[in-house]
Amino acid sequence: MDNRITYIAMDTHKKEHKIALHYPGQQEIVNLVMKNTSSEISKTVKRILKKSPGEVRFCYEAGVCGFDLKRKIESLGCKCAVIAPSLTPTKPGERIKTDRRDAMRLLAMFKAGLLTEVHAPDSQQEAARELTRLHQTARENLMRIHHQLLKFLTRHGYIYTEGNNWTQKHFRWLRSLEFEEPLLREVFDGYFTQTQHCMQRLDSLNKRVEQLAESEPYKEMVGFLKCFHGIDTLTAISIITEVFDFGRFSNPRDLMSYLGLTPSESSSGEKQKKGPITKSGNKRVRRLLIEVSWHYRHPYHISKALKRRRNNQPQWVIDIADRAGHRLRKRYWYLINHGKMQCKATTAVARELSGFIWSVFREYQARNMENAA
Image (tube, rainbow, N blue to C red):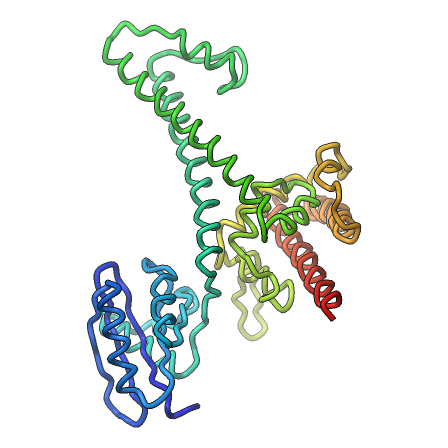
């Protein structure tokens, strides 16, 4: 280990950060408090740089400050690592927790190399990810107001029985409703207006996300994912903006572990016990892959929509997607026929689907390297 490196750990919060730093050649740990403002961050980092004989390395756990703090520190000439909190070692016997102790504990593990760094996106990648997450939030808000409106109507005896909800016919029925109490009419108008607002907002975001998917550098990768059964534009761009660089996973098992799709295990000696999936890592991509995996319980065939999505796509991508379709269909029914519940079989299919997706992007990178050579 280089004895000229200054190690700094921060326990970050919205208003201020607790800092523990260790200068090389000194015994004591210096504790500081830094306000979460650009001027204070710049002033503190420059002061540390003046006193440091060599390289300066910062670290903090991923949380409320996101990656903006990392960019500010690195713009001043230091290195900064964002640490995965779920993978930080903890001592079960510790019962005292303060910000100062957290910073000192993080510093000790940072110097020992016991922390796992999070892959940090750049500012453009993070902005694209925020857009897809905003779209998901808009969908959840629309679903919430739909439920609230229907439950309100059910409580007062208005039940639609002439078809599916939220069709044109259903909206005509909603507009024709009459209430004896003026307050009930006022409440209904509030719910209905909010519903229309959420629908318009979601339509606008749908168009914006489609524009993002058609832009560089996402257009080609989105086209690859759309070759898979059950994956269309929204799912494809959401997966890409959450993962970004598939090449950082050396093998498909690393991607499966990152998505939390691998089974947990508690084994000791001769006793072996497999548990549910770990659910660590990126929950959004895990949810999307499990939703896609439900499509593979049906017979695999090339529909008109899938043919349209595969237009002008490389044949090698289509071949991998076809292998995935036949394999995952057989895998699902093999697990079902051996007594597995549908949810477990679908999760197993999602795990293997992530491996096929990894293979597409690894092959894509290999072909690009060959072309460049």
